Image (tube, rainbow, N blue to C red; front, side):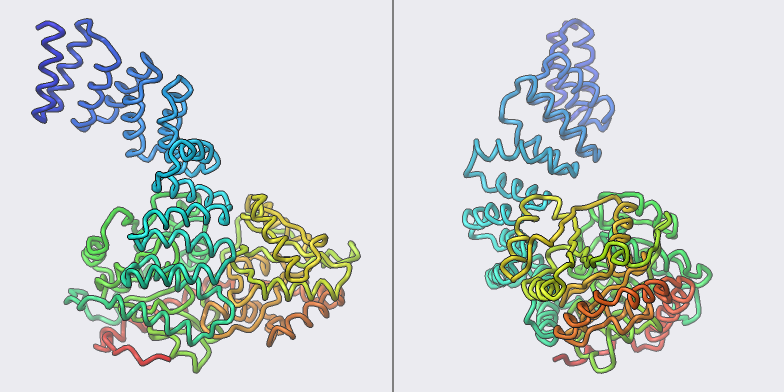
Length: 622
């Protein structure tokens, strides 16, 4: 058969859905001397459709070797690589084609590929060029704004997201990105208005609800009761489905299967607070399976997987299918670790995936959902009398509801550096999203009373010039001395811990204090001054952590006391030295005791279900 006849036969096979036969015919045609980039590309398509990714990749690469600016082959190869989670290689394919003269048409594709590869720095120039060429493309502009968010430029991103909202006014969901950008930029009131506008347009826009509820934990001037009402409103809009019958054996003492549902089995606060309990949990009584709603992994992921009894990716599964998979595994207690944070899969719990469902660690507040039976806390973050703030029943652990796993590397401890330096350095390593103007004004008053003191703010966004300039401008507007404000971006974890050696004590933001940062500071021997919460777990994180570490006197009663304590402690280096010398994780780092308390909590929840009390009506709220 001639090469031309083989090519015609290959095309006929492709039209008829006979991909393997088409590939064989194209191979024969090329062997017969009809080699050309188009044929190599067609061969790649045939092998791809036949399910042979390796041969498809080889064919597409051969086509590009013959014609480096071949757009169709570049697109096909990149699509193949992206499907295999090789996003960086896909982006490099587009880069090479553009460099070879493929034209500006591949700019948006290259930018999106770099974005998927978590390289927003490389994505930005491509998406900027593509936006300049197509300024009315709303989807492209949304992608550009997303990359700016990843680079810590929320103000600039908000301008682009606002244009997308104007262009797609019929879609409530596009407002969510604008709200998130405004929140990240510290524009809380505007962000809240945008999320409420999205909900008014579509009361069942879950992303808007998730982000509104998360935002309210940061917002000043909101009462705990108001925050609780909003969470209940979410639950009323998204009631759970009827509970199905479960085959789980109602034996209160048998070994239990615990499911953990999260997007944060990685280097994230959830991952860091999860590692110690998992390492100490008694596997004779409990089996733990992770349901991972994440496509990316890191070193912490690998560590956590080694502590788990099972690992199930669910990021690709619809809610009902994920719930069915959890039920099929016979999970007794499903624990949500995300709440209303990024990557949440709360709708999975709406399908009643397990007989008992609980919330822990990831979102220190009520979920608002009647599908969640319990929330795990402690007596400091949920003091008696505050139960009405929660839709869930409160299960209090005997100590702190958090347990911190120190890093594997040594962390040096030192006396207060102001003893040698002659002036105090106060610091906050929380992100700027927690620093509303009331916090900045309090810090400005502290510096005004301490003329030689400096304030160090360290967080990833400050590595970007725009974010750094924005916080300087806000601090100045709140009366702060910008000349004494130092800003630092993200550092590798060992270098991050090393910075504590240059800090005398930490200043907690409010109403959303630190969690991981406070635990890290305690481990480094640096106390944190926190403010008593307005009510609700999130606002009381500082209280429970400092109580566990044995320094409850560092919990200020109100803002005036917060400022006065900061000034007094900065003027008492010897007193601070004594605190630093005895400061340790205490019960916060006792993984064995913590695990025993957690096991008892799981067992109590399970006994409750076994006794037939698992469908207790939700109590009336505030």
